[in-house]
Amino acid sequence: MIMNRVANKAISAALRTTSARTFTTTAPSAAKVAVLGAAGGIGQPLSLLCKLSPEVTELSCYDIVGTPGVAADLSHIPTKSSTTGSLPAPVSWPLRGDGGLEETLKGADIVVIPAGVPRKPGMTRDDLFNTNASIVKTLVEGCAEYCPDAMIAIISNPVNSTVPIAAEVLKKAGVYNPKKLVGVTTLDVCRANTFVANSLGKDPKDVNVTVIGGHAGITILPLFSRVEGATFTDEELEAITVRTQFGGDEVVAAKAGAGSATLSMAYAGYVFTENALKAMRGEDIVQCAYVESDLTDAEFFASPVKFGKDGVEEILPLGELSDYEQSWFDKMLPDLK
Image 1 (cartoon, rainbow, N blue to C red):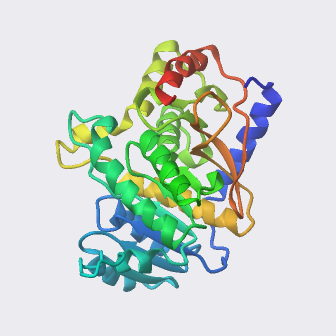
Image 2: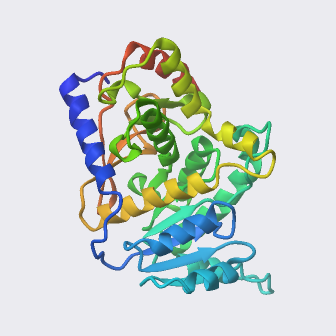
């Protein structure tokens, strides 16, 4: 697990290169993105950002309500991507499959799943498990049937649990490919970048913090020791680490029961999706993601990942941790097993 500092610098350089390439206008090949949960608080702004992306040529939106209206609205935006919106097919007899979901998923290159209920004050991600797990299970069953070769990017919380559930669904269907199933942890990186840049008086676009572990509370571990020029007192380091870990609570409290982190999560989901599409057409992309991994004793783990044409291409080594980071690592690992 431990590498030398040369390896750390190489990983950081790769991540900085990816960050600099997050926004480009290079013409891509055809790419279909399906957003499941497209009418929700995350789904609508995520769909908007995907509609604006030059990497997306077909945007397909699905939800249990509202998606025809969302798609119609998006279709008036003058970009080259086409837009469709589907609802679940009505129940009928004889029973047949969900035609709306089939239409959404067929031919998809990436399926992004933000569907589910949002967090409310006092709720942990684990409190969401019973409801959101069943939603993710149903949608991934659709992916297994209608687009088994697509990359599935899961946003629905708790990601630490919904990703393993998705894996089991895909295994049961005989189509599991660990290179194509990803938990989106990009928001943790966005928060870490923002908080440390503000602290140091830098432009956030010039910072790219490696964040490892999972996507809930203490399982989120930002590696601030690798940020060039960053010097923190023990108290400052503890404060910025904990703020990154529990940034979602900050938003939930500020919204006073009206929702959770939707806009920033939509942005993070878009960044992940656009980067994955760039990788599919040959760009060198490294970004942190929650994937099946042998870096630790946990089956799934978030770390810097090199993406390629077929999804996850290489899981990069963790590199050397500071003593402070190692202490957090030791505390979080049992929660991920």
